Length: 322
Image 1: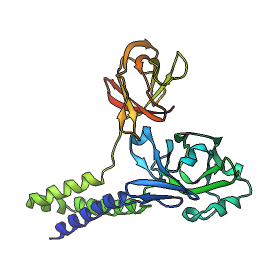
Image 2: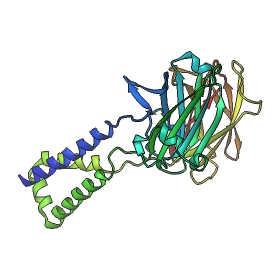
Image 3: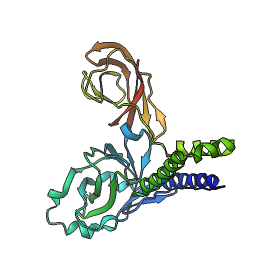
Image 4: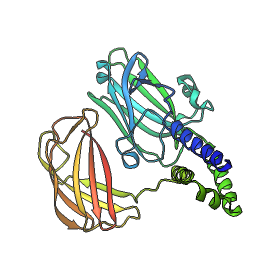
């Protein structure tokens, strides 16, 4: 009966961890509204989401981000007046000491705001969707600051949202729980009891294996780096054009002899590309000629590049704001 209790505790902790990972909620200047995240810039509202295309594909985040990686911040206006306002976007390291409770007053009291800034985009008017692309170099606590200036009165409306890069929602609890379970498993193995107990009960054996699988770390395939150039100039709406894709592995080595497929679309509008682009020629040196690219509207696009080699397949998502 002892082994049943141990396996039961193990499964309980596994399920608890999985549940808590899905139960993390937004905080700060971004709030959840049904299935959407909304940022409030004074009385102005916009749907807010963050993508980490290389690390998490199409997964959307409200604020906290799981890893330090390329991150795309997207605001879709709910108030038309935002499309006429000059909006600037700043990310600073959290030097307020307030953590998740930091507010605009705390940010205003920072003496050296430039010294704390890791990214700043000057004011710009985006008529449809506001998009910012920034690659975090390290994990930590940050504060995002969105400011919008009224075109007639000149009044500035601002919102702040504290967030964490490298957020798990669980702190060190998974580590300590896993460590305790592994210590107990090691004791059972060393004492010889594990083999005797598992041999007596097939159900216990199955439960034990499931628990170990849930606790085991997930491994990912090596990342590829895909960049592109447009020899004919910047993409123009409703004009067919071509790209040159350059593909490297995580070590910076050029990827040659690969099968490359390309698709894409607009996540916010839930539609794909109007054409079916394809790679027509391998140019050497990790370069591939892509033809048949066309965009039929402005906004945020994602181009998904699937690369297949002898060592396996990988996907890379290229964020693109037109």
